[in-house]
Amino acid sequence: MNSDFKFLDIVYSLAAGLVIGAIFYPIFIGNLGHRIFNLKVISSENGEDYKKPEKGAIREGLKHVLGILIIPSIWILWDKKNQNLYDKITKTLVVEKNTAE
Image 1 (cartoon, rainbow, N blue to C red):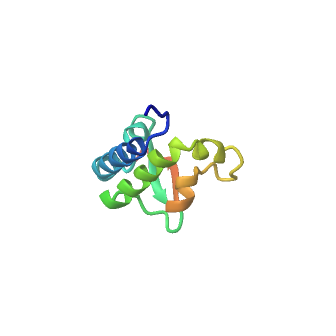
Image 2: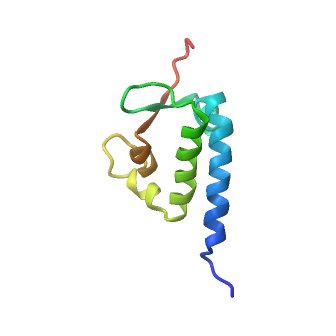
């Protein structure tokens, strides 16, 4: 049976997100794209850097799985803070890094 939407695709996407988040968030306070564009992920509740591996894994896992549904890409168009759906769920913001760091 050939199907465009397979359960294993979701599992693989989730696994990739978990690994990427757990590795990159403690190092870059975000993913590789955040590092390249001098951005970081912070908590929207207290402004602290979002650098724990388990939190990064959850955020990236959600991003990868929800990305399959296209919802995060559309959500950002009408959000006042330009947050994706996974940012809302994890209570995070993506901001520019202070160059003095």
